[in-house]
Image (cartoon, rainbow, N blue to C red; front, side, top):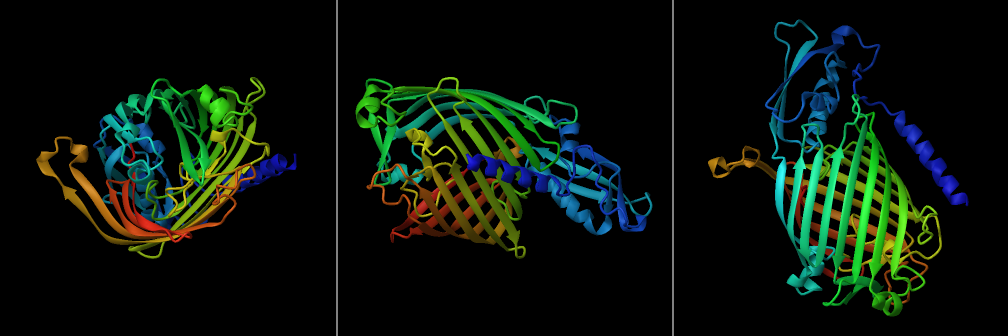
Length: 484
């Protein structure tokens, strides 16, 4: 088993290098270059917070890149304030932040910093009207806009539940999928704010299930008289985040699922393997994240790195054995105020090379692992690799003042940005266990898109794109990323 050893060594080296990168730790002062003379530095004498009502002051201070008493090189002071602005906005706790500083009466090299905060709306009792399909375009064209493939219900997400950036959620949906979910996340377990915890539970069932892939399209089995798929998920995780941008997450989980006998015995005996109609297993996973993006849902500059290692089946039930490594890296850098370039890679490697259950054999077309131009296709596989490059051009930005017609202050002012975006993607999967009808497996996929992106508030993104792929197919597609 050379692969796990090599991967572990790779992750260890990667972690060591990143851990050595200079950045602030919670409770540590940013001193800059120790050899800089005092007259070339700015000392932050005090920090004043205004406008926050629910969020605790220590939470705000903990998410800043500098603290009271920090000595910062004068040439870096404005850049440090910009970093703090991005860090605070990325918490999702605030609708807007204004940071100012003053040196009046303090003498040379001394500043006070004032942070004027407008908190966002924290309670979202959101009616659920969601599509069962992978994206809007599949539902609109392939499923003929069928309302039978819609989930309806309600979800309550209470952010900043106790003022400590925690989140409580509970939801109940019916329709295509009947689901109950509940969870609680507390980022700060200890005084230093370096340890966090999260617990989630989910139970779902549906009368239709994707049981196989043919011609790189999902095949579904439907039985209106019974639920053909049931699943229970339970997870508990611990997070260690000593530094502002770097986090380590250890997750323990349990999965239990059943399918109808028709799927297990007739349509796809390999769904769980050996014609079984049920599967139970425990899982353990580790995830490393180094997130230095300025805006997480629509970055303009910065980098993002995520590496993961997940073991599904730990020898207790004997019904599942998988070991998967994943990596995602993206970089964003502005050319000027109007143009920004982005590039990235993503990969998945199955370290256990035996045939995996159907739902665990997914590669391109699921979650964030998409290639533009292939929204109507899925590509299964043990392994995959995707690379992307793009450029954005900001057309204009403004602030919409809706005035008194909106009674919630957090939504009264809407920052709006409109951008022209071009993307070029390529991806490939390694699929040793698929039939010949899936011609996109083991094939280099190439796609490009040109479209308009609309960014509302800080991170709600809608895109209208024209996409084209290497098959010569093209079309207009809609994509939404709403941060609820």
